[in-house]
Image 1 (cartoon, rainbow, N blue to C red):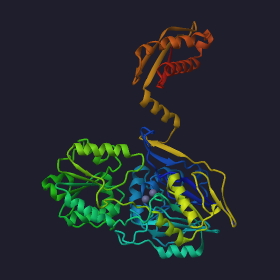
Image 2: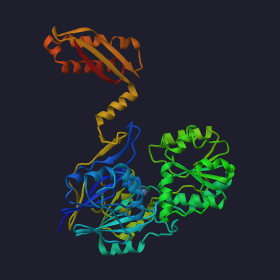
Image 3: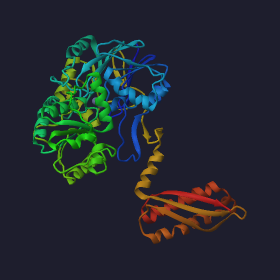
Image 4: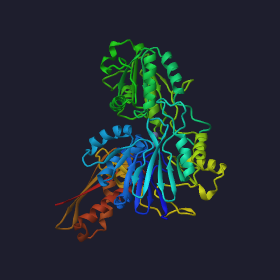
Length: 548
Ligand SMILES: [Zn+2]
Ligand SMILES: [Zn+2]
């Protein structure tokens, strides 16, 4: 029997850009194809995607990409992989409806093989098959993926919680998960985002009461911000606004699109007469209005952030507004979120981010639910994914308490396959992996050099050093000309820079001076050394050599 490899290409030891391959002989199944968002050390970077080298090198073996749910960290990199890999993409009806317009916008739909599945389908994947199993999360139609191999089932939990009162009434198929356990789960790849959280995650339904109270306490307009992909939360906000006799408008293009798609397909129920256009909102008294908006993470281009700055032409914050933060900060975004909150307060709004009754609950399982998943599916091996190392460690601690010895519980990292045969499992030789940065140009592959330059520019500015050389005599003509922007420090030191460059070039013989490339290098190196030594700064240095 073939050795089975589970190969994480992203999303392990980090939150975001989920993408994992399962390989059996000459067949590869890919589960999810997500993106992550840049950290503050990545200026100008829009998104981060996995390095797909392994999949591209093995493109003849890839049988399909199987999508667990339509969150960006699971689907956002599809437009970058599909042009290089012509394989079917299997996804739920809702996921396909949300993915399709993004693919159309970025790469066009021509030649793409998008296939819809329902939970319980047996999907072909070479000598393997894949069965999606319904699970609850913050977006409808989330599915665990049971990849059926010769050695047993490799089960991806996807992002999940065990919500027994889900907003759409569609429960986790616990019975099927139990059956899969009996059929034989070789390995469980489990969400571990909330492994540090005790007990059970509160049901999404509990948020409704929190929203009711927050709405009732609001003297004027209610602006509620949540993720454009949190469809259950949008439904609850719609329900509460309706109950309270408020009209509802939406500020944010993505949110509008998602709501439109979801209501068309029946995933969101909007009472007739509830929705109004944002431009008509001034016709209603403030206490009869609710506005749903994006910008929970302080994204600069989002509606809420622009409103907080008074730069959103379609809506101004006015005293008496109540802004409900119905989301949790993604680590790394805290600073920009607080800046937005402070600006909103300054503009006269009351911002509610901690209410006596919760106005946000997580879509990810707490520790008791994670135990329940193990208990249901009885995997031989467990490996936590979709979490940072601290979450993975906490999960493994829990697994040990549940009786999993070290050789059956694995701490995975991106790029290192977990290999399993009939008798054992081990960490295999690494495959190519990493992060690929995409900036506004849309062209993936921004290099570390470019990133370093951007950071140096942002921190220390730049210096242009121009040197004129006489090609006939092989001599430097006159002192170097220095121009700079964004450099701060003792200006008399900067005045000495031409001397430092002249000293460095002094040792060059006439023939060396005629070698423009080496002169350029020396000008840059000597200027960098001088500025760092004397001023402690590392600006980007641009050397220009002019021949006369
Ligand atoms: Zn996720
Ligand atoms: Zn998710």
